[in-house]
Length: 303
Image (cartoon, rainbow, N blue to C red; front, top):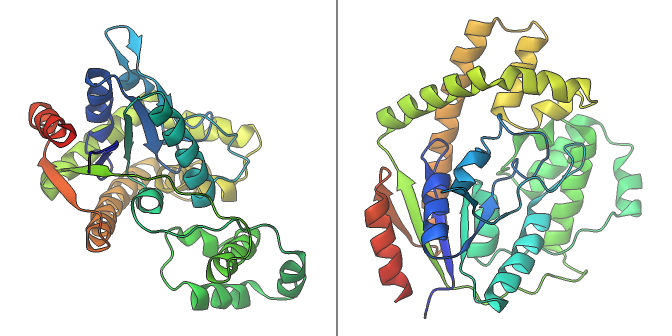
């Protein structure tokens, strides 16, 4: 089957975005982001949007699912899947090649494997039933339904716990309308480095982002009304910097712990990608940032 989607995935700091943008420019395609945090406006440095990478020779390469939502609002895998399908159908209707890039394994898996995602409307009866439950009881209910969670912060916030239980109930007992999945024939390419090199890349990028004002970004988001708990839910950079701003960590300690945590996260991403392969999403791995090799293999795939 002729491929109608190119996917560039990889762990954090692997350089996947710059490769995907170059590929989209060369093939007159458009980039679709599969990043659970880059959808939020005003969260630029901590999420690694690197919007300058989308400019080549003074031209902005069209991209989607970046800066589409205020950070006070929720975005989840159901919304990603729905919006991806809409964008994919629109681009294919115009005979434009979509290039999907990202590292959020659940988002990638939701469109590359047979991932059923029924619409989970608010369930007033269920919410009334759960209202009397303690947080520990809610945690037990959720973990009984889904023992492996992509986002551990779902266990730490009462409202998120209840919403997650609603979603899992809808998945197990689908009754609402389901998104119609388009026919996708994806060529999936993974960007990988040896772990020592990736750790050095993570350290260099973290230092650069601190110089660019990542601490100030987190402080500004809090001043604009985002609670510390909400910032914590956005992942490692926002979590550790929030703790520093709350005088829970010294700056040097924060930097050290954050760098280690990002390295551990990168290893979990690679584990997720290997699991995707076992689920029927074959990945052709590219060592380092060898664009010429990647470009050649993509052209062969599309021929």
